[in-house]
Image (cartoon, rainbow, N blue to C red; front, side):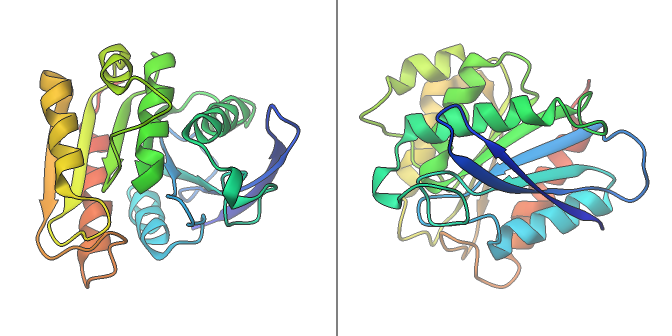
Amino acid sequence: MPTEPFRMLNRRGQRLMGLVDYPAGEAPVAKLFVACHGYGGNKEGRYLRVIADTLTAAGMGMVRFDFTNGAGASDGTLGNASVAGYADDLDDVLDFLRTQPRLKGSSVSIGGHSYAGRAALVVASRRPGIAAVFFLSAVYRSNEFDMPAVVAAVQAPIFIVHGDADREVPLSHAETLQRIAGDKIAGVTIIPGADHNYTVAGSAEKVATTIQEAMAALTG
């Protein structure tokens, strides 16, 4: 499926690099997933490519980008990373996507892996139009934000995905979010044997299928 690179400037004037994975054809994209890599990751992570292949094959689109102050191709230094900065980047990317002809009317879901899970929740808390939030083997606790207040402001359904063999982010983070969010949790998928970056055979595919099926079931 066609993948188109893009570059833009964030609100701090830093260059941000990304990719749009389009489904076949030229029609407007009805459903779009914007994926956020974790600390030290980048838009080319294998699990992200697996998700992109799965979604585009189902007629959906995906956006993956390198955070500024990250380890990818965007500007900045990893040592300056912050949840607030990542949330601002995601906000800026979402604004940019509204200027793209095939994406400006898309129903948009967002997902954050690891460090970026909090950023996805923060953005969902201040953008009521988000269709769904995916919390992917993600960190819940934050010194930068009052996370219970953030979760209270999220209007979108939240889907939790975590591997039971994750040695980097304990399952307790997902369990805490589940407890705090209550009936906002629309689905919990615990993948047997999956590690933090979904390198175990079949685990990235399970993440991808979970996201695709959840997005397909969303109305609007």
